[in-house]
Length: 166
Image (cartoon, rainbow, N blue to C red):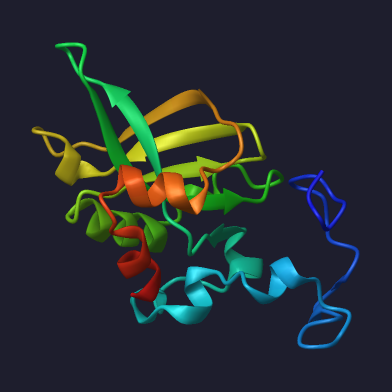
């Protein structure tokens, strides 16, 4: 179990309805909360997106990757943006503003991993990934924990630090 002693999709003990975090920027705030940010808070390119508590999804600042097997049997790592969706709103990832944002990421070769909890995910490839310009959602993805920063750095050829700084 993570240091907050709560499972994925479980409301944090410090969450206060319509108020946010009761311990934000206090001595009681857990370390992991102090080093984590959602992209909506820190990135200008997410300005058109609704606030996470209204959109029912959070875009994780930490990049990750998926590994696909090509037709010739070779493997390829593809960078993904992780989007954590409120399990009560499983279609929140279809928000038109988010889809426009994902399209822009896809132009840079970045797909999306829509996470519903710690294990269940949906991989989304925006039209720039497809010759016909179509969206593709691959359901049934089972994930473990996110990769370590070292694994991400290696898989993305040392680009993870630059991605986080954007």
